[in-house]
Amino acid sequence: MGSQSTKTEQQPTPTPLVIAIDVGSYASGCALLYYTDYEKNRLNPHIYVNKEWGGDHGMESSKTQTALLIKEKNNPTNDLFGQKAIKTYSDYHHAQHKRWRFFQRFKMQLLNQQRSIDFATQLEDSDGRHLPAIIVFSRFIKSIKDYVLKRVTSSGSVVDVKRIKWVITVPAIWPDRAKSLMRLAAQKSDIPGANVVIAIEPECAAIHAIRSVSAGTHHSKTTPSFASPGSVFMIVDMGGGTVDILLLEVINELHRMKQVQAPVGGPWGGNYVDDLFFEILKKVVGEDVFSKFQAENPTEFLDLQREFEYEKRTVKHSTEPEPEPFSLKIPGGLLHLWTDSKKQRITEIVRNITVLGGNLDWNASRLVFPPEIMWGIFKKATDETIKCIKKYIKQAGSIKIKAILVVGGFSCSGYVIPALEEKLSYLHIPIYASEWDGDGDLAVLKGAALFGHDEHSIVSRKLAYTYGLSCIKTFDISTHSQQHTFEHEGKTLANAVFQKIVTRGQIVKSNQWIDANVYYPNDGADKITIYVHASSEDNPIHVTEESCWCVGMFEVDCSSSSQNIREREVRVSMQFGGTEIAVKAQHIASGKCTESKLLLP
Image (cartoon, rainbow, N blue to C red):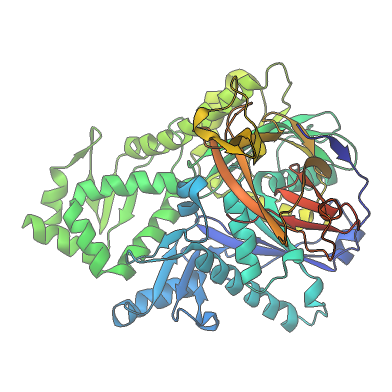
């Protein structure tokens, strides 16, 4: 394992403006925090949250749906995003479908591809066609960026655009490659790489929550007591796509925190409920009927999705008194196809349908489901989260957890919090719902804006994986695999050896540089390409093992006028305690030092 050192970082020049962009699975938003406002009140500064997205169906206007309409493949200036993209696509889909590319809820497609993400990774549009993920994400980020900058300019603010810091949020459970892709997407949207910061969503929520509690601006019925130094609390960020679970400890009065355990989670957000419900609906009306409806009535299908997104928030937990059935308005196009396929009236069709032991009903153009059906759907989603929380707490051992903070859009459902309280009551840990500013859906976004002004709010993190480099070593018959041996200048060497730098479970400081290796370039080589690997095991031997995967690469500049190999020697050190893996290369002879973030392989 490499030697370790922690250097005191010089305080950077404050950025005049931080703009945070939260690209969510269902909805996205942005927040602005000027340094002048942050300096006046670091606990509770005025954070400008854009509320001009044009929401409908009673949905919050503080976010817009994560949707992108690409009208021309090579002309991003005509792209539409959010609600406007959905409406335009719906109104003109049939006339323009061959040229237009419509993407919605595309974020989760990255999670599904996990360790294989690269420049060629594709995302699927609404018509089953594909575009590289880097194009879709960069065009979406650029659309929001350009929109926000217009609003900043029109407000009369005088800001040097080149000094704006852009914070892009990602789930805690996202792989390193996905973080690299988001950074590259931001850069391709015309944001300088030095101005891009990747932030971890549950960490941002914690930053906002801690400061809100300390400032006394929380909206909970009782005063939380987890903001004092030494307190350990859990953040459960329940978004549209993922659920992130993270244990943090407050370490001082400056609201600095450290990770107590590496984050965990899974794809159990609000979209999980959507998927389960629409699978049931497809079976009710028939797979063929529903597929035809989607193809022939894209506008009505999008309306149906929005209707369900709104209505599902009204579902209460089974312990609530006087439970009401769940009803959903069925679009005319679907109703026509359904009745036509059955050659019956809708009331006759519904009368004979039983779902999960419950009978459906029809009332005023609405399909009515017994409450037990929706309870079953929500239970499947929340049970996964509860199971993960229980395991996570068990792994924490004797650590006293003072509170569980639940944030994110999915937590706003009337079912979720009572379900957590019921199943976790034996722990005797207070559960605080989205109460930090009366709008828990914005906790991540506001925290990201704060993080942009204080990137060391999280002083250390606990590694989920073991990291190392691929290298060549002298063959050791007791350790190395025979299939990786080769001969060179009379020596037997082993290739693809996992040279470990840090081990999973290790605590690393956010500003800690760890020596990785010293490299001597081949004759005439101006650069060296080095690949970084991760493993779910403590001590992997070769990078080709099943537990290992490549997380990225970096290039080391070895150019020099000297032909002496010793004078071209480069020392490489790495940083694992930040939100991204960083690399520093130093020429031994000249002292010249360069830093960069991990790149996609």
